Length: 352
Figure 1 (tube, helix red, strand yellow):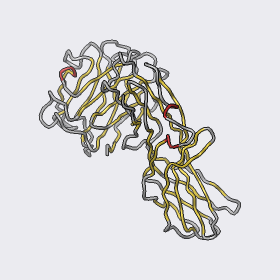
Figure 2 (cartoon, rainbow, N blue to C red):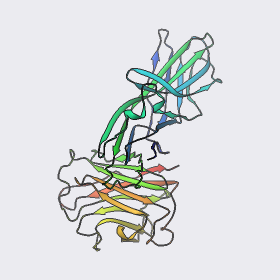
Figure 3 (cartoon, rainbow, N blue to C red):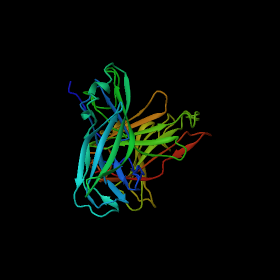
Figure 4 (cartoon, rainbow, N blue to C red):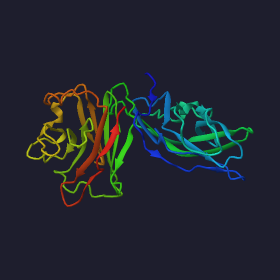
């Protein structure tokens, strides 16, 4: 059995501007500014629970400094892992063209990336789930630190940090993992939640795309109020048009059937019209190669697998379109009764 890489997807978890400043007695300050950290949660599945790497990256990094007693001559930003009280850098980049005693919003201009397992206190076994059906969860701290060196060889530093949660699932060999038989690792990235956190959409893009909708039972425990008419959908505007539409709706429906059809469980709605003048049709997911939909036993998790290059039973132009470069996404659902519905709203996502 090949061991699996745990990889972060290309899209961003979210950019944050955090004032992690270090202030010296003379008032000098250095801080990491806006950045995109492609790591806040990694959720993987395989049929043997093993992995080789947990790769993370930081892009679009900026930094600032002010109040230096002497002009800056160099600035280095490090991508660091802290675990069990030990902090180690796994990548860094240096700019030697900085100057002056104060500058703001300087672009690092490089991507920082590395493997969490390069930390001397961590190894793959710490994260692996070796028993069938088991799960391991472990948190590590990811840091970005800027070190500004002055002409007097003094250093001013500042940092920001985030917690990386690694969840590894070992899918029982008798169970249906929703992935390849030889064990597929799925790295879900959170896309959006609605205002009260009841409905959350996750995605993992690749040649095969995985979507996941999770419902928070603590927010609404009555799901589904109508056991026949409930539904959950991932709405995809393929190509992210200026006027977001619903080229595809990948859904799961209760046994009552979708709209005026008898289609239940997994289905695809496709729109051959426009956002203003839709022309939607529904096809049973069981009849479509390249698509699966699953509902968890507790009815609070819905997963959809889409192989863009293999979709069939759809009209020309919608079938086999290939993985998109960009999309607008929305999770949308309702329980078909007197309970509630919910939507994450439409969110732009750059797949590349």
